[in-house]
Amino acid sequence: MLDREKLEAQLAQLPLYTYHFLSPEELEFSQRIRWICENECPMYGKTWACPPGVGSVEECQQKCMRYVNCLMIATITEVNDIANIEETLSTRGPHEALTNQVRDLLQEQGVCPYTLSTEACALCERCAYLDGLPCRLPEKMHPCVESHGINILPLLETLGLEFQYGENVVTWFSLLFFN
Figure (cartoon, rainbow, N blue to C red):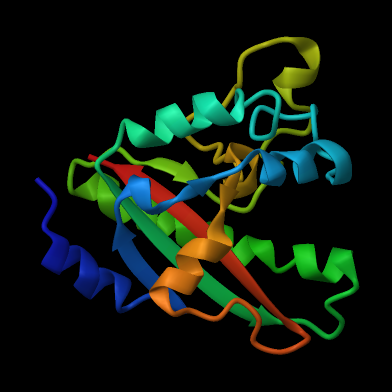
């Protein structure tokens, strides 16, 4: 059984911008978000962490709704030029490390979270998806939040959180679903 007080004390020690416990029902799943993946993301169809490998938006929503709880974590970082996509994406590493750290904290309490993060997954040199094979590291791979069609902006608005903190600030989000 999760000791939330202990977990919150541990989360307070991490360099998170914010964290919030919520119900998966509070999330908005939207085909519009998936459209962005399909039409603008160069990783579409290339990894198990991205569509169509993750399933349809409806399948992703059903997967998330199997859980009673969701922990949203967020980090912020500054870049010299937010228009420089390489520089912006290079700041994901520390967020991913924190996501794994929070996942580990949950696992230490016997909770097995389903984790969505920022990555299109770069764990393997070549994703098994491209060869029609199962994921080699499913316990380490975290699909990205957007791959599931989750529109995070309405949640942030409900929570009274800003998304934009200035023109060169990047905000990263992860969602950890658990029972």
